[in-house]
Length: 340
Image (cartoon, rainbow, N blue to C red):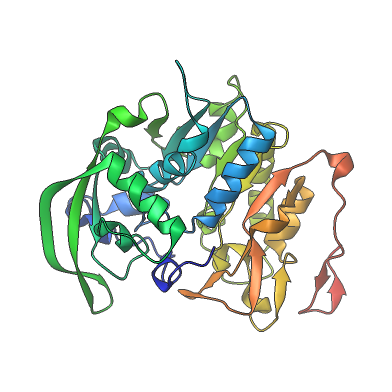
């Protein structure tokens, strides 16, 4: 699916030093930003990943499953998932697919539960939602129709808000109709319930989920040390510990959506290459923890705030049996020696 530049440019701001869309919280409690996995979130960001997830659910979990959305922030991503799979989630008494949004910040989860959002009139990834009129994309029109079905304008409009460096737009407020998502979407937060590092404890005695989403936030797990490569032994150990917990939590044939943030994929030494990259220490850890990539999930990564045109990375990884997991030949191009 070919999306407009507004769905590609600046789709994730790696820094989480501020919550620019929610300045009142940032002023009152500066620690809020450091508790949350990401700052600015948008509806239908990098939606190809959710379209692939939708197909995977139909083919592998036709009778339903649970979806965990970690780093959900204020809920825009969680509701986006719900809208993308709405047509396969038809229910009689209970829905086939349920989604729980997790975030370490209880303040952010409170905002998610309120269900009030601001959509920029232009430039940002979900600005196409600010107008209830057709675009030149069938897929975007579908998202737009679904959004306006479930979210209604409150009548509040903030004019000339800086949405990026010296770029200004109007911000239109919308409120979700929560009844539309009863039994489908819920949110939990806090240092334990919202932390993906605690996933094994939270879901130890619960049904295994078919999908775990943790997109564009892996650098938090690695304590912001992913700008340099290769990682140290301690960082690799931390990464693999979390990946093993995720793998043990996932159902058979379950998938992990990691996103396309170049910083997470440790692409520093691969910037000038071409083709699909699955050879960084991050990818090596995924393979070693019994994940293999879904080949149709390759996307251009976001490096230094821009989309890379010359390389792609796999954004979705599937849980496999150790016996079926054949590690690829991975080569350290920096030191000219095999990694495996």
